Image 1: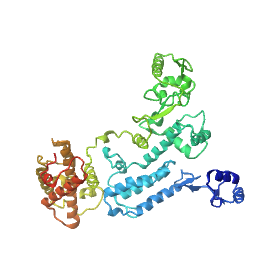
Image 2: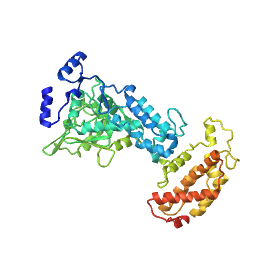
Image 3: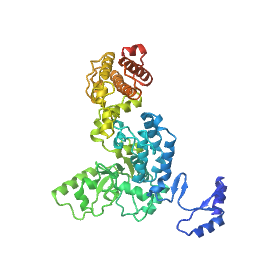
Image 4: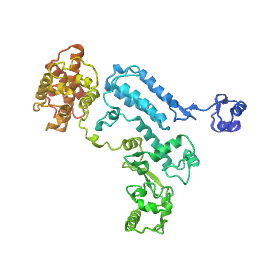
Length: 514
């Protein structure tokens, strides 16, 4: 070993410092490792150990071995003061920092569900302004928060989805890097002609590859496995399984033709063994347990043979493409979209974020649409004891978000003046839904509608801020002052954020925005 390292130094100029090196033994006694380490002139090490920030030799199915990731989360959160940040600021930190902290570990290890739950619990408490010491009410379920913005969420990607997407990347690399050294090592350990999954896996062994392969072979989204998403593009047909991989048609052949698959003798047969081209003539060879005899099986066999006639083959190596996209290339973002699945009816979520107002206003409006704001009635519904449940402005009706924004005399006065300023018919609203859809009723240009949508969001946010000023500071609302604030804030945010046009204060004052 010393001679090898010496030759390496002479060839490369990189000298190995044996005094700083560590010798590890796998499958040998500690005494033997100690003796060899002394003879080599280095230190004796033991498993597990950290290398480039990753634990080597540790069982990552144990929650205790994920403590470095959890500690990193807590240390980062301890440096931030949740109570001094707006919810928009906390959301930005979650998306840009916390969401990416465990990426290094997630890119290699399949995280236990308990670890995922603990990390997301830290993110959830931070989002709502709490911590491990002080816990505050979570106003919106985490399942909704982690939805896409267009589906009614805040766009925080679930950590499990991030983990699974990064694990799928290794599957993609395994299929498309047949000559890579790491791939050959994995195949020499786990390779078997008896494997049914999309990748080989020796179940008698434990470790990272088994965890990943178990996920690849068993995970399904809306009833579809990964083998129905990664599509084989035949070259010589030696690496694509005829029945078990997606390579022709819209689905895996064993699912499209189950009766024919039942008659097949060799279930794991490769494409090259069933489909050949000789002298420009396409040859199809079958090996049935018994020939298809029923009319249904005969018709299915004819349909399958017609499908195979259009398949192009050559002597090149088989390729794999990601079927959920135009270019066929793999991206982690594409894998995330597939893992999230079809949102269903949530894609019809009616509140749309305004592109030119701050996120704190958009998030407020999102919470108002979901009725997840700390009004007195909302707190009563959550078993909080409230002495006075009436509106702090009019003191005549119970305080709910609908009353504050649409029903109170103060809100009526503000909406009347906003309608006059924006030159729209007097706003008649009874529910938050009517408010968020108010801009759609305008017959102006798309730019005008976008500006009006932002004005509506700012108006609702300013009404809520005035409510808090009354509740916590005893400041009575003034309709004229509120409308003036809405115009001023709207102008500053529109001027600096909106990309649809430029307007000066004089034009803005008369709402001349196209």
